[in-house]
Length: 76
Image (tube, rainbow, N blue to C red; front, side):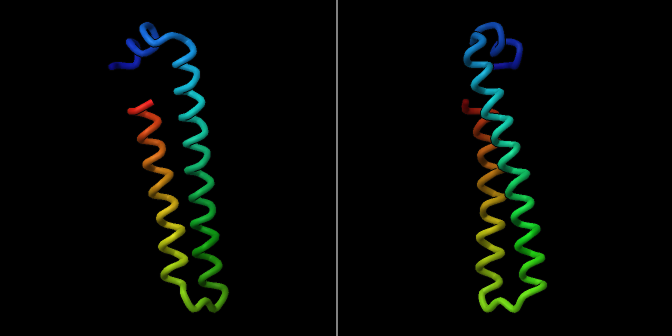
């Protein structure tokens, strides 16, 4: 369904839900980028024995945030 059809056919409540979910998904994505950057800086600063696992978990969180954005764009 195109954007215009969603607004006209879906009603204002569904449009509001989709808009709010997109905004919060995007804010979560920004948050995960900040956490990922801080994790990389922490690994460079401190001696961490399991740096690959920590950076992988942080990167996985960024991937999940991108999937959440895609889900809120196309499924909701």
